[in-house]
Image 1 (cartoon, rainbow, N blue to C red):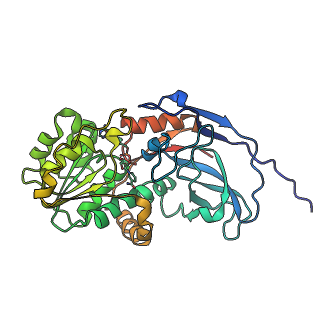
Image 2 (cartoon, helix red, strand yellow; image 1 turned 90 degrees about the horizontal axis):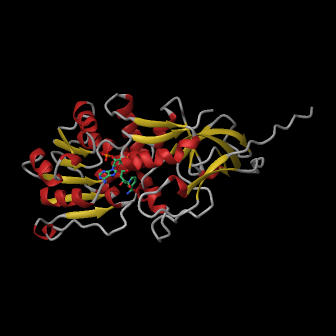
Image 3 (cartoon, rainbow, N blue to C red; image 1 turned 90 degrees about the vertical axis):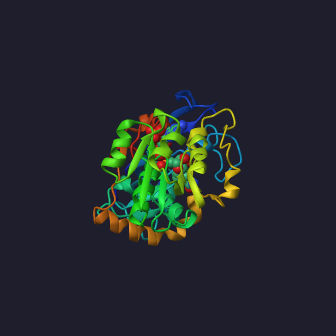
Length: 343
Ligand code: NAP
């Protein structure tokens, strides 16, 4: 029997067409239609992406500077995490209909080596969760607290960016692992209410309502033991001031300065780290992929027991991908920002 060959689909993909100066603008990007994908060769798969991740680190990749990840090339498709359904497969062990997590986001269809994809189970968790709570952002929170911050039972923990993807998990996981008091900061009163009302933070404040150092002092009059930094700048300075002797800071992100055209003004009080014997330690999640099995077991357990809450903010349509990214930088999201592409 001759099988009728279905034409391979065309895809749309986002290209970076100009390097942003300061805040990115829509004209820095173009949505480009591609030629139809080729039938995947041996060991390769074609994936219809269903959810794309938009992440703060992507802003750094838009600059032409040497970093821990290479910059995006101009007039080429951007990449990033995505989950999708396999629609054609030349790879053993990956079947049409399987769902996979992979690194060729920012496009509707991705053709790749199956070894670069991980099969995920939509029955175990909703697909966007594999980009957030069960993906790299969840692992960042987990590894950051345990390995970099050396969280100890009884610690008072402060988390900035606390209503975002990493921060909302960091605060809740800190509590589940024995922190005695968890404080969060976020950029709106609604987010602050969510932190104390739903995510179990003991105290939270809106960093736009007044100086961070003052608000942190009011929330933690006795000081803090561990700071999980997603923001940098004024937040880091306030945390250095609040950390007790022997305190630790996990330097995870510095989103307050990702769009700055000037070097950050602070922290101006780094000298305090000496007398207080502080440890300020940077991290990159990719160094901690060996923790994944333990992370999935522990976090997966909390999820199924209903002890860990997670939110996703879903923007629909590939044509809104850049707007979702810009919205995430502005703080439009609660939990993980994802772009849903539909079937
Ligand atoms: P996210 O927190 O879900 O989204 C970004 C959030 O940043 C926004 O929702 C916004 O919330 C906040 N924000 C924006 N501008 C700000 C400012 N000037 N001051 C304070 N907050 C600001 O993003 P995410 O993916 O979870 O990432 C959070 C941080 O972790 C980022 O710094 C990111 O680079 C870092 N990260 C690091 C690693 C690693 O391996 N080191 C891995 C993943 C993420 P508000 O409404 O609260 O302002």
